Image (cartoon, rainbow, N blue to C red):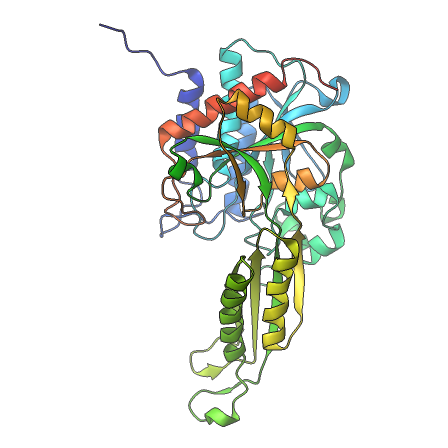
Length: 406
């Protein structure tokens, strides 16, 4: 009779860390509300700092507050390999989008040490700030600001639904808004970036594989539509006398759907702000945010243009990321290394895409999501597949840090 083997230290620590994160920011829906520069965010950042200290990693923050933990010194030993993701969430989002990559990265450090592997180049673990953009409306604020893709002036002026600016939120969190900005020193320490992420679709479930290698991110962006009407009484104002911006909102939603179908894209209006917001009042103003994505830049922009023409307003661009391909040679190499892992593109944006756009050699690994659902409490990954993700990242990092590379 064979003797049962004990779980590896990396698997044990993965499970411990995952269990510790479960209560933080849990909402009544079963999803999560982990928004940037809030109490929940502070708890997550403290947790990350504690896990880095547990492993003896040197923790530093860049000019936007992204957390970088280093095994080795990238300033004296040259740029290193960085792994990690983010810990924030969309409203009522799933547990895996972001945290899976951070926990997997920390567990990979454990796995490397258990295997006796000492990186020959510095190894970093990162927790990016405000990847989802759930609070201030612009995704990947942390990586956009430090790479120069988002100016500090524009970032600091962003406001949340309560009218709190990013500058005010930073002050409330004990940070100096005047310190934020492009950080070439922090970005220059990254020789290669590898991000593990739960798949946000059914590609791996349909292929019956646990792990895939990412190839590219579709072009995508967010636009604001300011629809102005006239406030009035819902009970005494005749239909023909109304100037109701909600009707233009309805037209925008329907046009977004039809234009997306025509141009082989996807488009969503999932966030609105209605003023004054009374049940018995015709609104004076509706602000809507349009998210549009697709395989071809021009097609995405045509979807946005059709929506804007239909409602007769300018679509104000709040963020735009063009087609972003990951390092093709690196992706092919990792696919072979991981037993011919499938290659998958994605319509979801990631910090990896921002770094790739800044010229950093970048790769992504996706872990199977059997539901195919993301940004929802139904987002899921089986424990065995999460452990397979740790093993895959261990193999990748072992290879990338086996020797100093030009």
